[in-house]
Image 1 (tube, helix red, strand yellow):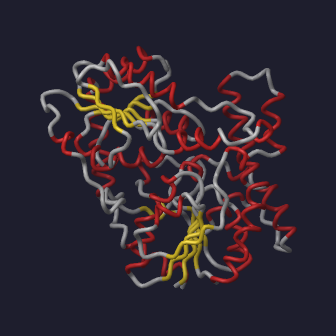
Image 2 (cartoon, helix red, strand yellow):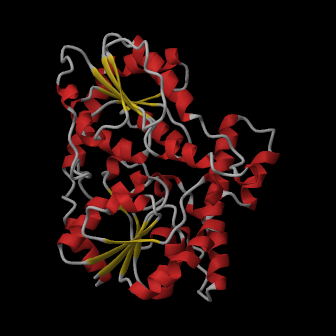
Image 3 (tube, rainbow, N blue to C red):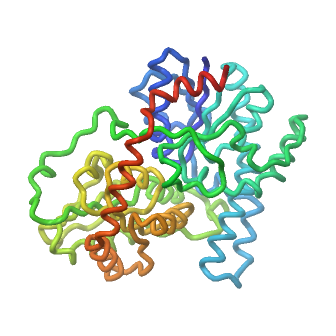
Amino acid sequence: MRVLCTTLGSPSHGRAQLPVLRALAAAGHEILVATTPTLAAVFQHDDVRVVSCLPEFTPSTFAGPALAELTERTDLDEAERQELFRRLMTETISGTLARKLLDLLRPVVDDFGPDLILRDGMDLSSVLTAERLGIPQLPTPSGTSNTLDPAHTVEGLNTLRGELSLPTVDEPLALAAHGRIDYVPAAFSYSQHLPGSLAYRQTVNVERTSILPRWVAELPTDRPLVFAALGTALPELHRRSADDTPSDKMPVDFPDPIETLKTITEAAARLDECSVIVATAGLAVDGSGLPPHVHLTERLPQPILLEATDLFLTHGGFNSVRESLRTATPTAVLPQFGDQYMNARRTEELGLGREVTDRTADGIVAVCRDVLADTGIQTQVRRARLAMLALPEVESAVTDLEKLVG
């Protein structure tokens, strides 16, 4: 079986795909990953073939005529702007971006001849490619798959179907006509629109060489351990947006991750009853003057550290959400952009943590202390972990996908 996997966005998208790809490769199937030059490194230690045929993902990748409406709507409050942004992004993903990816991926697809496509949630071009080839396609775990409203993609995709001489499809859920892959059980699903999934057990062994530094093992254990991180997407967007020309920049402001990290470290300094680790993702943050219970580090193997963490102060990316569910770690969610706001609300609905709505250091401290003291959250995260552990192992995805391909 020949499996094409598409990956764009941030490294977290690739890491979410690795467990299934490894299982398929171990079963003898041929895997081709089509991705960007930067994300190719995510797959370099695995038995898959990688082709860097996609452009680096920058804010201007998304910029298109549809997004110009954001700059014109000065009458909207922040919640209304976020909702409009999500709708316009969905239309762009199913229009401008999908057309671009179709052109870039077609020679790769036609040369490889896949039997199955496992696609990035932002890659809707592969929905049309699968229809053209008469093969199944499934979205892999991502915040985009969870929050994208399929109803807003129909017009754009049908326009592209017309250009490809494909029949129009008015069923929005054609995006997941053969289901989707997830690592979260139905009772704790973060998907808003797509149907039930092929769900498998979340693994903590994503990066094969993961190991915690010795200083972590020497932290005091008579106090709660708090881990704070902003993920990979926002810092990467921040770095790449600096290279965009003014005309290429997104017509919506993203939070400054450096300023957010400064606020987080200020909050960490006030949590003097805890040990706090803050991951900076390589961004320059001044750690001088911090009290000894605060530890700055560029990066740690998050899935492993969460096994011993009492509270996760997170941006609410879907990888981080799943990893905290797997380890029964309560969360204080400080969303930054995109699906993270919906993930924060869903986390509260499920009783797994709280959203930080007061984004000052005082607001962060208050939510962290509330979550640490909430026994109901402690009970619910343990329930979620048991549900996660009851899922079948990821290796069973091989049989499921083989049956799907037939």
